[in-house]
Length: 255
Image (cartoon, rainbow, N blue to C red; front, side, top):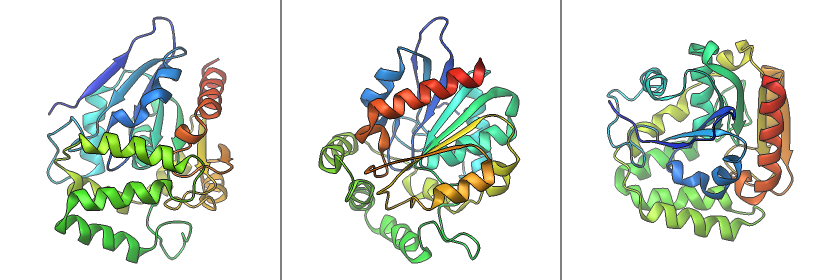
C-alpha cells in the first residue's frame, strides 16, 4: 500500500519527518515546512485515508499505520508529529527506536479522550458527537473541527482561513476510520521511550488543554513548552518561534 510522500532535499542536513493530524494532510505544514527546509531534509507523509494517501488499511489500526510509515520514512530521522500525528510518532518511536533520533510532538496527547486517571483531554461526550456527526456529514464535521482548533487563539482568524483553503481541496477517503485512533492510549509507550523528547503545547488549545503539558512531562521526562496565546496550531501563530525551538532541539539532540 502506497502513501503520498513529499521530500525537501537538503544535502548534509538532518532528516526530519513531519506527520500531520486528523482531518488534514501534509499541506497543513505550509510556510512552516518551508522555513524548516533550510535546516533539514524533510519528509512529509500523508497519513493513510487522509489527503493524497487514498488507500488505508482495514481495520484501520495504529499498528497498521506504523508499519506503513516504516516503509516510507527514512531509515533514521528526527520525527515531529502534530495532534494525532504526534500520537502516531510516539507509537513509531516505540516500535522502531533505532530509527528515531529524537521526537517532537506539537499540540498532541498520548491520550486524546478522557480516562478516569487522565482528565486533561477531550471529554467522551464531545468525541462521541464527532463520531456520530461523521456518519451524517463528513464535510460539516471537518469544518466544525477546524473551528475548534482556532477558536480563541492568537491569529485564529487567519489560521482558520488557511485551514479552510486546504480543506476545500481535500477528499478524505478514511476520515471516519482514522478518527478511531484518537481513542488509543499510548501513555505507556511514551513513558518508556529513551530518545530525546520535546512536547509543545498551545495555551489556548481547546482540543489538547495546556494542563496536559505537566502530565506529559511526568510521563516523558522530556522538554515541555507552552506557547502563550497559541491554539491547536502553534506552528501557524508562533511559526518563527516554533521553528527555532525545533531546529535547536534537533541539533542539540544529534550533536
